[in-house]
Amino acid sequence: MPTKSALAQQLAVVAGFDNPRASLEQYRTPPNLAAHLVHTADLQGDIQGRMVVDLGCGTGMLALGAALRSPARVVGLDIDPAPLSTARKNERKVGSTTPVSWVRADATTAPLSPPVEETTVVMNPPFGAQSDNEHADRRFLETAASIAAVSYSIHNDGSQSFVESFAGDNGGEVTHAFETEFDLPRQFEFHESDRQAITAEVYRIDWT
Image (cartoon, rainbow, N blue to C red; front, top):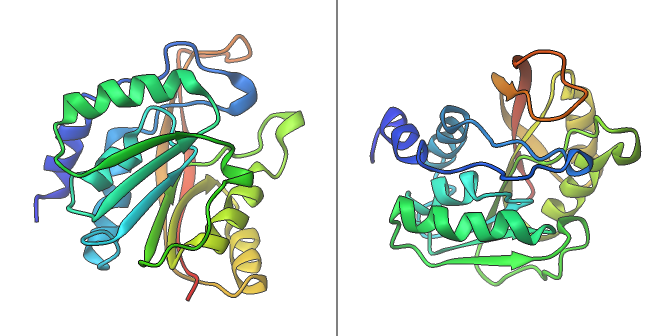
């Protein structure tokens, strides 16, 4: 298994959003964070040989990280066609041999049925920071609960009670959690500094 740092180096070539949309909270997932999440999932046996679905995949950072760890196949799903086009270019840069499908669809009403094979969901959903997008991560978790055997998701700081409660109410259990730093570059008018590091939380939920 390649090291976590080697995976982060491979993902460093993944380009972010050309014209990010604030309403969708489109931020490039940092390569180090993506590598940490995917490496953790791989150590738990949640990647190799499985179907991996990236809900709200953006330009493909988590999907491509998973694709480099020998899953059966990967599906990246996003409502915005522009980052999906970038994701296809990023796939060629990364050079993975895993089959990857890029699908335009709303991750909160995804046209997905529970697949035959065990599925792992990886996702960096909107935190719900925008006033018209509150509880966006809840809707992503609802989709994960309906299709996944296990999911890995990134959430805003202070989400532990919400995530644990949601999982428990929907037949799941949080088995792993860790705190991480999420680096946000200045890309919207309401940003006051060139870069800001925020605290985020990653959760593994077993839905079986």
